[in-house]
Length: 112
Length: 112
Image (cartoon, rainbow over all chains, first blue to last red; front, side, top):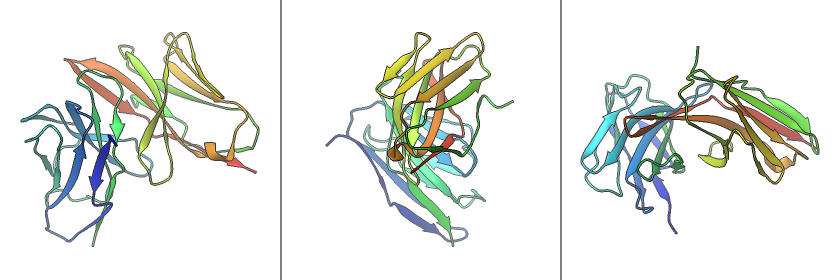
């Protein structure tokens, strides 16, 4: 089945720890995105990538880092510099230039 | 002013009722518009695109009013399974990249 997978479903982070969220897609989409969703707020764009080995900061990139070494994969690292990381993280992908994005099931990050 | 504004609700309606949501957007250069549905603790999924000529899919009708910069979603004969949060999404092409802005969502609760 084609789709987007994210893992883990739940992730716990200790103070000062970096954690990495996985996002994989087999839709052959060029573009991939990371969003953060907080209660009472719309999805906010963290990073996006339109092509392998290239990515751009979104609206709230501080405290996050990404890589795009393969077309299928776009992992997000939440660094210790992100002071309020508790949120629902959603990965999405789309065809290059397409208007519709398809989302993975999300990862809930909680701070211990 | 937020780029995309929605009434967060909740809208509590009885089964069989007709319910309508509106969403306003501030950027007149916005080019394409969508409604996504998000179930509790799940990822958003595309519900339908929105056109000036209107778009109907079964019990759902979406409409765009460019002059007034709002889009609407009408749900007829509400079902219990329609209970979800409905996200208004506005796209603008920005240098070959689709800049996507999400509203905070309107929560619908259909009650028996």
